[in-house]
Amino acid sequence: MNPILAVALKDLSLEGRSKEVLSGAAFFAVLVLMILGFALGPDSQRLRDAGPGVLWVAIAFASVLAAGRAWTGEQESDALEGLLLYPVSLEGVYLGKLLANFVLMLGLCVITVPLAFVLYGLPIPLERAPLFLLFLLLGVLGFCIISTFYGALTVSLRAREALLPVLMFPILIPVVLGSVKGTALLGSSGPLPSEITTWLGLLAAFDLIYLTIAALAFPAAVEG
Image 1: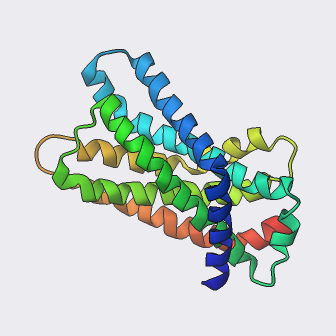
Image 2 (image 1 turned 180 degrees about the vertical axis):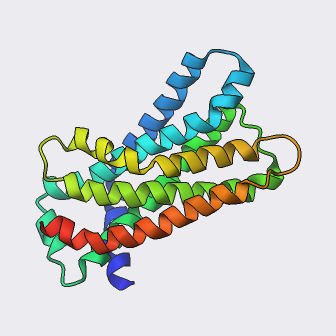
Image 3 (image 1 turned 90 degrees about the vertical axis):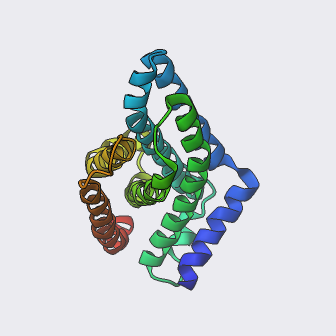
């Protein structure tokens, strides 16, 4: 755990001084929420129906920006090679970057989620807030697992800004689907639908499987 925490704390301390990644990703996510809100019009029912999808689309795009900037910053400061030469396992480097990105994305959610509730009137009752928080944690973790891995894979490529979302989003379809469906079900009237556990299980299984795959494949990906 020490190498993982060291890498994560390094990234978080740098971000605490510059606030470059969080401010850029938060601005982009807020912009997505506002533009799509204007595009959907003033119909309150339409906004409520579209709210879960818009919220998770904003988080997904912000995760691309955050992960891309995290690895690009290492390359621009000529620190990437040194980072990969740390006398620790490369899996630990990946998990440390993942942890830092996860914390930053949760900070982003502190801004975007309340704004989405205000703009789109998401009807999630207070007693279902713990379940929504669980969906948020699992969904954000899924985005961070994939974006951190592919951010490292594309950081040295010339067209990385275009390639990163192209590589990520097809794999993230289960995360987007599970997060949107789960959030929409939490806002439904009446008793809590039983299929909510199906979407939670999908997100948990995705995170566990892809975290294992990404951590094991990371050394070969960056050394190749």
